[in-house]
Structures are given as C-alpha cells and as structure tokens.
Amino acid sequence: MYKILKKEQLSEVVWLMDVEAPLVARHCQPGQFVIVKKDEIGERIPLTICDYDRERGVITIVFQPVGVSSTKFLELEEGDSFQDFVGPLGRPSDILDMSEEELKSKKFLFVAGGVGTAPVYPQVKWLHEHGIAADVIIGARTKDLLFFEDKMREVAGNLYITTDDGSYMHKGVVTTVIDENVAAGKEYNHCVAIGPMIMMKFVCLTTAKYNIPTIVSMNPIMVDGTGMCGACRLTVGDEIKFACVDGPEFDGFKINWAECMKRSQMYKTEEGRAMLAYKEGKSHHGDCGNGGDK
Image 1 (cartoon, helix red, strand yellow):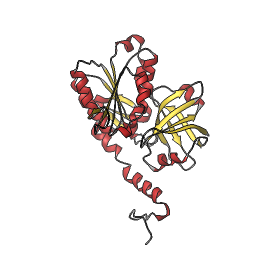
Image 2 (cartoon, rainbow, N blue to C red):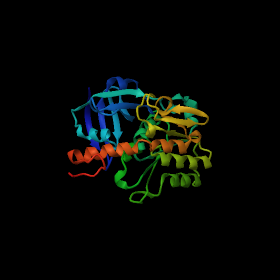
Image 3 (cartoon, helix red, strand yellow):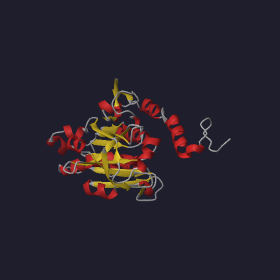
Image 4 (cartoon, rainbow, N blue to C red):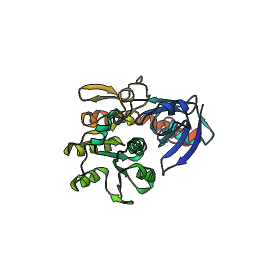
C-alpha cells in the first residue's frame, strides 16, 4: 500500500497528491510515469511523475479527474493509500542523454497546456539544477485553470502565461506567444510541448515554421501503460511505436497526428457511460443513460 501524504486542489479541476513510494522515488527521472490503482477493482491509470524527493521517498502526481477511476481518487484523503503505485515506467526525457556541452548549446522552450504543466515542471527543474535556463509558456482556457505559476517561476528562465479568454496575463493560445517571441528576436533550437493533443499538434505546426525541433508527449493516448493493450499504438515517421514503452516522448514532426487524435477518441463513449452510471448511482438507467425510475 502507498500512503498519501498530501492532497491539494491546485485549480478548479486539477489535484495534487504526494505519495510515499520509496523505490519509485529512488529510480525515477523526468519524463517517466507511474501506473496508479486505487483499489482491487480500480482501473490502472498512467500518470506522469510531476516531482520526486529521493530522500523522503515521495512521488508527486497531478491529475485531472476524467473517467470514473480517476474521479474515485478524490475519495482518498491524506493518510489513505493507493493499492498499486508502479513505476518508474517509460523512457526519461531526452535532455538527460545530452552532454553538458550539448545542454549549454541549447536554447530551450517548453510549452505546457492544461495538466501538461505538471510533467513540464520536473524537466525545467532538472535543467535549472544543472545551470540551464529555459523559457516556459503555460496556457490555459481561464485563470482559474492555471496552477504551478510560482513553482515554475522559480526554475524557468522566463515564464510566459496565456489564457484563451484573456482573464490573466496574455490573451490568446500558446502558439501566439511562440510567434510573438520569435518575432521579438527570441531564438530557440529545442522545444518540448506537453498538453492536450490538439495543442501539441498546433505547436508543432508553429515551430516547424521556424525550424525548431519539437518533442511531444503521447501520454494522452496511454491506457494500460505496459504495451499489452495496444491502445497507445502510433506511427512515428515510418515506424510503429507504443507510447508507454517507446515513449512517452517523441519527435513531434514525425507524429501522424490524424491517427493519434482519432485513437484518443476511441474510449470516450464507454468512459462517458461509466461516468454517468457512477454519478447517478442507483438512479442510473443503463439502457438510455437517463436517471430516475420507470
């Protein structure tokens, strides 16, 4: 069992938990993920590692409840435990393979959308600890959906925040900030974009105009996390890959985005039905999804 040491609501829809998992904390690296399971009947949920403390043996996860199983995570409080907390899984970020000389030659740009802010943070923090400053763009629909602003400001070289509705800082989407920074003379030669599938696609279309190599995370299409279910199968260039075992990070210019976005929709209908049944409880009418007795 893996004890929850801290539970915190970061925004209207995003939650953070610190979980006691010494073996995972001892071996994990930025870019990797864990598989979390609430109890015996819970679904296995892949979550990117947001932070870690090797001395305390603690892993920080950040999640947005979407399906039934992740929503049930909210039933757990500090002192409760997850039944399973498996990891680290996946391949670490490619920045960890770079030599000191290569790191210093890079002009890094990180683009985070929504919950993607969580997996961006450990990479920017790792660079900061190695004396490398990275520019970071965080985007959200509204101010209420933003989180980690202060934490990111502590480790980023420059932090740019944008909201779709203009409720905080810059008004617009993350790609407009990229365009504006490049127009202002900013130079980048390595971009990492993590967030919703559509955001990552358009970041790649934007960075391609400026010949900025771009890495993206295919965590959104992962289900099982071990390569057994095949849900995260994707085409990268002329190769077939699986996000959970070959990634989750890949060259964004080689991703078949049409295929990936279609695959990300595959489980939504059944997931939606399960969520409706969970929320309506005994009043749920399985045949049509309408609550109430007949």
